Amino acid sequence: MQNKKIENNNQTSSRKLEHIKIALKKNMEFKITNQFENIKLIPKIDKKISYNNIDISTLFLNKKISAPIFISGMTGGHEKTFKINLDFANAAYELNIPMGLGSQRAMIEHKDLIYTYNVKKDYNIILLGNIGVAQLSKYNINQIKKMLEDVDADALCIHTNPAQEIVQPEGNLNFKNAFNNIKSIANNLNYKIIVKEVGNGISKEVAKELDSTNIYGIDTGGAGGTNWVAIELLRRSESDLNFIKEWGIPTAQSLIETKYAFNGFITATGGIRSGSDIVKALALGADACGIAMPILKSQRKGKNEIIKYLNTLIMQIKYEMKKLNCRNIEDLKLLKFNINNPLKTVLKQRHIDLNTFQSKRNKI
Image (cartoon, rainbow, N blue to C red; front, side, top):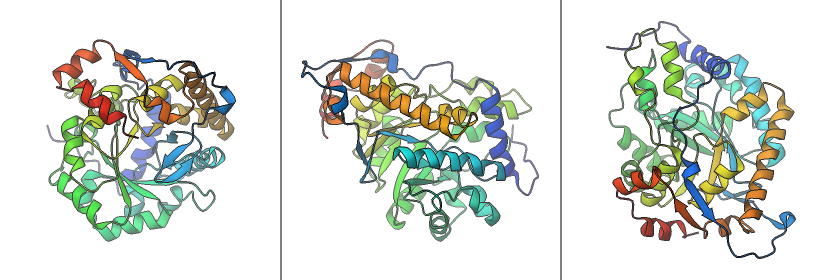
């Protein structure tokens, strides 16, 4: 069945607000987990590490940040989303962490919406621009460049979301030449490029293909957190596509597969909900972790609640590292680990050699 096209001159903008409303009012989490519960880290020999001496700073786009976390791109493109992005930027500034924007397609289509993304005029932060891979066939490189310049972005995230587009009532199903378009923009745009999924995960096959391009990084965007297919199904009048609601690669598996095949910068997103999740992701080779829904929910209580939530997460990271006797992120990447079933069996079926993975993970 073909998607029913919604005739609205500003449908992209309206959809942004609708997504936020649905995500906040209903439980839109995957039923499947991110699978980090099946990763068991083995503590190092006690070095008598002090909590106060634990250093969780790291590099992001070759710039020092205070913690290995960032605010994942969520929104923009509607007048009511400006305050949300501004509150996100305030927290990113106060804590010295990066922030991502939601898809900027709306501001390309409607110049009067640029301000809903333009938070760097108030906060000097690392800011990640965002456009969908399907839009790379529609907009030329000069338009993408102008889009990034208009918000003073530091890098470009290209989100790939075929499952979401399939069920979205007004979805774009034209993914023809997607890989070539990514390759072209990575070669010709003078910005670092991060290719990201939005909840269905990156496989080792996709990661290997992307490793042959000049992109800077991959954001796993695995299953286990917010389910964008489920959100779009609520917007869809038919129930013909409910069977793909729980489809996706869990975040821990996607991270391992990506690290196995890709040699660039890797961020782990998708159901990251605790300091334990973050520490495990870093130990498996992630360079940073992105968080979205818990931050959005915190923002509804006030901008200071975002900072409070993130400070709690930072405290959890440090306590986890103290428990594991790790002084810094480099120590985490040297930890031994066990992988339990069902994840262990799945990785075997996916022909992931854990000895090879271990050697790639240890390359700091």
